[in-house]
Image (tube, rainbow, N blue to C red):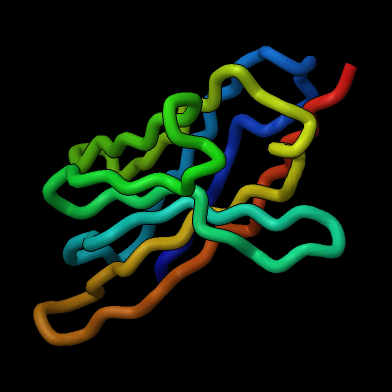
Length: 120
């Protein structure tokens, strides 16, 4: 069984910073692309940032220059450093990863989500 567990969310003032973590555990053979999504109340889930197994990154226009995605393959963990936070960044943040459980089987996994609230 594979699990993704997010941590690091919370309440922060506008202009502040938070660092989210997403740790994968279980019967993992390898981890491919990893992503951070977010969903604000009344809105659809949107892709925030993505990182390939080789470290190539991609960001939504709304977070470019403020957020940074990274991963530590030795720890099966992905991070999202969020700086200069704005109220519109308020959402539940989810991690997502393509994880192989064997040489011939891979699935798409989601974490349970962590709340980020940006408010004064």
